[in-house]
Image (cartoon, rainbow, N blue to C red; front, top):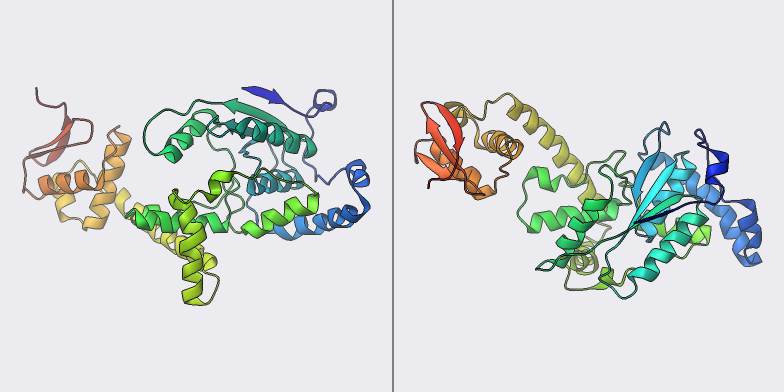
Length: 330
C-alpha cells in the first residue's frame, strides 16, 4: 500500500467545507480549444450535484477509486460538494496494464487535489475471477467507502440478481444514500464530467469481456430490452428497484415482530415473513442460510421434520416450541 497526496497538503492543514473548482492555472495550461469546455464543467457540476446524495461535509470520507469515468466523476463532484476525500485504488495485478492504471489513478487524483492510497493485492486462485477480485477489494477498501455506481449500474444489478433468482431484498439492488451518491445520474453524465475537465480516465478492458455476466447484461440484454420497449429502460429498472426497496422495508418491519426461535410462530406466520425472520436470525448467529436451508427449517416448524442441516454442519432442532442450533452429530 502506498499513499500520496497534493504536495501542499501538510502545509495548509485540514480545511473546512468549501466548494472546489478547477484550478485557474490548470485551465490556463490547456490548449485554447480545451479551455472553453473546461469552463462549461462548472455548470455541469451545478446541474448534477443536486441529484447526488453526498454526506454532509463534516468529516473526511473515503471513496473507492478505479480511475474510471464513474469514480473520477465521483471524486470531482465530492470535492465540488466541499468534501475532504481520501481515494482508495486497488491494483489487483491480474491485468498487464494494472500497474499503469494505478499510476494513471494517482495522476487523476493529483489533478483533482485529492489524497490517494494505492493497495496492491493478490487475487486467490479458483473459479469466478470477478468474485475473487471483489473480495480482494473489500479486504482493503475501508467499509462504507463511497462508490461511483450510477443509475445504469443500478439497472444492471437488478437484472443480474433477477437472473440469479433473488427475492425482494436482492432486487432492491443498491440503497441510495451517502455510500452510493451517484445512483440517480447516468453513465453518460460521468463521461461528460471527465470530458469537460479534460481528464482521460482509466479504461478497463475487462468491461468489454463477454465472459462476464454484467458485461453481457450491459451490452446485450439492456439494448435488446430497450429495442423491444422502444424506450430507455434503465430508468424503468431503477424505478422498479426503488419500489421493491419500499416493499422490502415493510416486510422487514413485519419480520421484526416475529420471534424466529418460536417454531409455532414460524409455522403460523406468512411464509414470506417467516423466511425473512429466519434468514436474519441465522445470519446474525453466524450461519447465513441459503434458500434451501430456510425451507428445511420451515419443514421443522411445521412438524414435517424433527431437525435439519444448516450450511457449515450445524443443525436446527425443535425442543418443545423452540428452535435451537446444535453442533453436528458425531
